[in-house]
Image 1 (cartoon, rainbow, N blue to C red):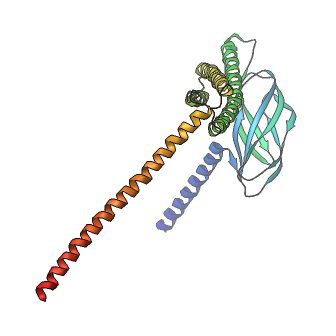
Image 2: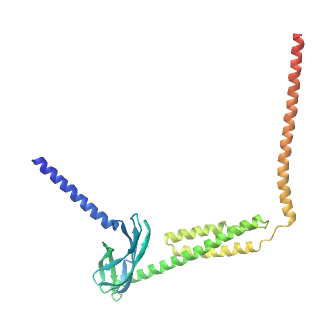
Length: 284
């Protein structure tokens, strides 16, 4: 009887722990039955009108349609929402929530996506409170930094496209006997890699410096390529003569070696023939 009671208690403990772990996983991962809330921005906002961006991922095996969200919380009211019309399996997209905040402080929002609930803590700042002024300044600086990073990223994309075009033009002119000996794209390529690294680390100042240097280097190399002249005919002939001479030298060497081996073979044959005749005479 005692063993049965102990076994029952043990099973109840196991089930309880399983339920707690399952709830913990749901809370940490913000995932319920295939729909994930993978990002929520911003998490620090001012009193008044606000826009929240909810990044949603579809972890189901089929496309999800008309994904909607409602956000509620102390002092917050929603007045507009832009849903996700369609989301393929594994893909991510954003739902945009527009609302108004009337209460400062730390607030827990309840986010209902279709028929599932998620939760998100946010900090609401009162611009008129002196204690919140530093937070507002930090938010402003972060927003300015993000905008700078975006601008640099956009310029980098354009520069990468121009670099690819420059590479193709260099290859074409090189094959068309233009003098491109003064053109070198290695430095420009290094600048592009450095800018990408600066963007990933959030180093705005270095990214901007490298972007300026890259633009200058691109202009310099493009000007050189645009002004490249076709090689004189005599230079082309010299290059071809040199190539032909090298090839001809290899052929001559081959035939010389062939003749040498042929002579050695004839000498060896004569020696062998003499020895064979001597043996025949001895036997005779």
